[in-house]
Amino acid sequence: MDKKKSLFLLTAAAAGTVIYNIWKPVKSDLPVITDFELNKYLGEWFEIARLDFFWEKGLKNVRAVYTLNDDGSIKVDNSGVRIKDNKLKQNIGKAKFQSDPNLGALQVSFFGPFYSGYNIMHIEGDYEYALVFGENLDYLWILSRSKTIPEDVKAKYLDYSAKAGYDINAIIWTLQE
Image (cartoon, rainbow, N blue to C red; front, side, top):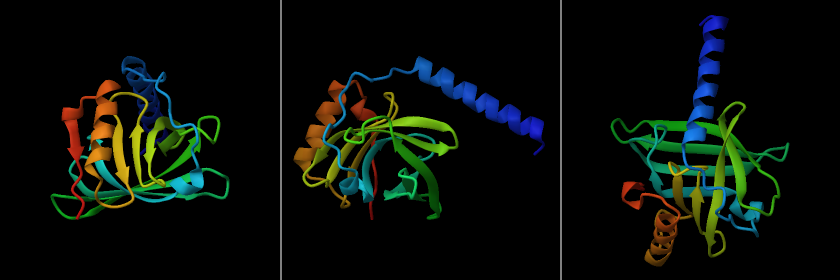
């Protein structure tokens, strides 16, 4: 691909991201957790549920592994298996704190300089379950250290998500084998 075409595509993607984020509802007024402990959050998480989006469409066995990089940022290793052909799909990104490291407000990037909000709204137990919102109503994840989640935690997360404006009927419950 020539440099002009690459520059055009990069510019178009950046402009599209800006326009999309302007038009989508942003929930910056919802509080994230305030006693966040990164070392407890690091490690493997299984995706229990999500609002489906292009990267995860048609995936099962979705998981995320968070590890600390030498520069203090967080390596994000997302993977899942395509249901249609059983092939692994993987995406490596980077996360960093939006401000205070005691707040569950991070920014995640899988596309170079473009970051999106990753807001940890609830943590249960000793970092066993987590409810994560993106920066708008299109992104939501329910995560667990195991492949299941207790019904009371599920109900709490669904109730909170509905009150926050999410369409909980659109949530995809991830197949974890």
